[in-house]
Amino acid sequence: MKSDEYTKKHWEEVYTGKSDEEVSWFEGKPSTSLDIIASLDLPKDSSIIDIGGGNSNLISHLLKNDYNNLSILDISENALQRTKSKLGKSAAKVQWINSDILNFEPTQDFELWHDRATFHFFTREEDILKYIDILGRSLKTGAYFILATFSTTGPKRCSGLEITQYSPEKLKELFKVDFTLLESFEKIHKTPFKTEQNFIYNLFQKK
Ligand SMILES: C[S@@+](CC[C@H](N)C(=O)[O-])C[C@H]1O[C@@H](n2cnc3c(N)ncnc32)[C@H](O)[C@@H]1O
Image 1 (cartoon, rainbow, N blue to C red):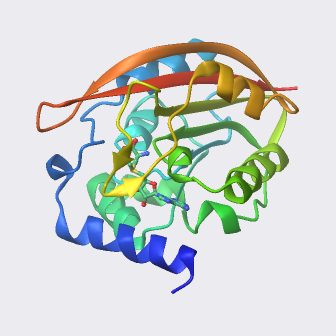
Image 2 (image 1 turned 180 degrees about the horizontal axis):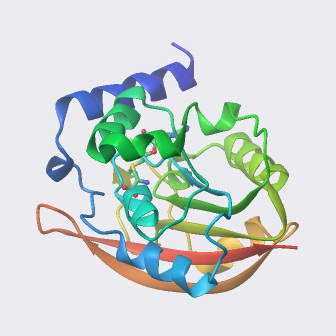
Image 3 (image 1 turned 60 degrees about the horizontal axis):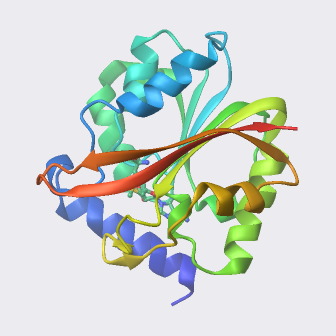
C-alpha cells in the first residue's frame, strides 16, 4: 500500500471506530485557536481554511462568530461527514475538501491557514517540504498561518503514529523563506481522558 493510501485508511478507521470523546486531540471549544484568530481582527469574509480539521469544532465556532468564507480539508471522508452532521444546515455554508494535504491544489488564495495537530504527522523531509511549498502557494502576502504541533516536551506519537516534535526555533527556521514568526507559546491540552499533551502554538505571517 502506498503511504498516502495507508494514511487515509488509518484515519478513516479512527473516525469510524471512535467518538469525539475517545480521541486524545478533541476539544469541546478550541479556545486557543479562537483567541488567536480573534486577535487578528480579520474581516468576516476572509478566506479561512482548517487543515486536517477532522472532528474539530473550530469551524462551528467560526460560523457562530459570523465568519462566512470557511473551508475545511481532511484526508478522512468519515471525519468530514461527522463534522457536517454536527453542523446540520450550517454545513452548506462551508467548503468541504476531502484530500491529502500533500495532493491539495488550491483554487483560491487564503487569508488564514489553520493547522492544529496535522503537520506534525509528517516525518519524512520530502513530505514536510511539500507541505511548506503548498502552504506558500496558497497564501497571499500578509496572510496568516496558525500552526499548533506537539512541543519538544510533548508526546512522541499520536493515534498510534509517529509524529515530529517541534520547538519555535525549529519552526522559524523551517518556514523562514516565506514566513515571519510573530508569536509562539506553549499550551497544555487536557485530553478527554484527563491526560496532558504539550503543544506549541505559532502564529506566522506570509512575507
Ligand atoms: C490529530 S487530528 C487533529 C484534528 C483537528 N485539527 C483538531 O485539532 O481537533 C489530525 C487530523 O489530520 C487529518 N490528517 C492526517 N493526515 C492528513 C493528511 N496527510 N492530509 C489531510 N489530513 C490529514 C486526520 O484525518 C485528522 O483529522
